[in-house]
Length: 464
Image (cartoon, rainbow, N blue to C red; front, side, top):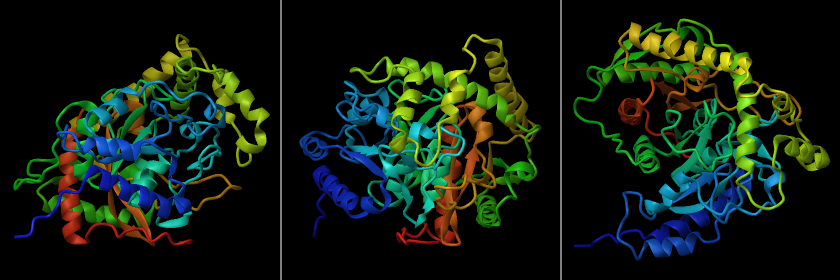
């Protein structure tokens, strides 16, 4: 009898390194490879397994501290600052589980909070990340490199972060699974912040089961994505059709089929389960501006060397290095944040309260309670838009804002290919409903695979 040899960690790392060399010149997903990755993998091969993900390569978004590797948020202002001396807690947990840090992924500079007319996936430090399904299409933002790297087959495991759409969008655009956890579920120390009320790091993976396994590592809690015989019996899933459907025929078609598959798996579909009120963007923006200025100053004080210490230092650096930092778009959001209210200002406190009230008890929780729902489901967003360095980006719709304001989880799963590009559905829930969302998403993923199969691998075509 022939026995298959277990793939070693070193072999896995070498495969990931080789794949990076093959595809990264086309998509610029990895901005900083770890020079120690292969040695780390060899050490993992001498150990007893620490977890189910022992020896597996993982990529981490370049706004998350990694000891000895640059953490830049894509900005040249941090490129020459000494690297962090210690890992963010979530990175330490990855290493403690035996995972091997392959490197850092590119992102939309400052996690897409630099200018209202940004180019998603572009940073002065890492260049422009491209979508592996069509190199002229956006990889989304701001966790662009993490989504593109998983889609391109560099490794099935990457870490992104989301404030409002920054995991959901790259997952949908690149055809991978993206999980934005409940705010605070995954530790956020050592992460360059935007908003402490909305920021949440989380997994981008190839499958729902991998997302559950990576979330378990990040949180220290057990999550299960197994699909049992009962599948979705007793689960009630709402369809918020009024605002979060109907803006893209390409996204709606596979999402309608997803409703059929969920029903066939035992779920009860409750149509027209709409949120009671529209959500205010101006309140959310004010909250982010105020929290960004304060949080960034706190973070910059943790970095050694003579780099920037305040948001004002960043703004001035960009002006002084405009040819490198400002060739495609400006820094209007950074400049607005300079004059945003302080965190003890009544304007900020009132805006934060309105965001939470309208998105929680007056929003997601209200519709879940009214219809006795386990979760909501909607198209994630339209297919990836064209990369454009001249005109502002435009997307017809998205689903991330209610959960962003509430601090609640989202789980995005590919639903098919439309016009040659991936599309996805997103499952929403209340706070700490990750286990329910994983169960639903895993059942849907299995049904989709039985229906149309997994998404085809990206072909790196130059134009779609």
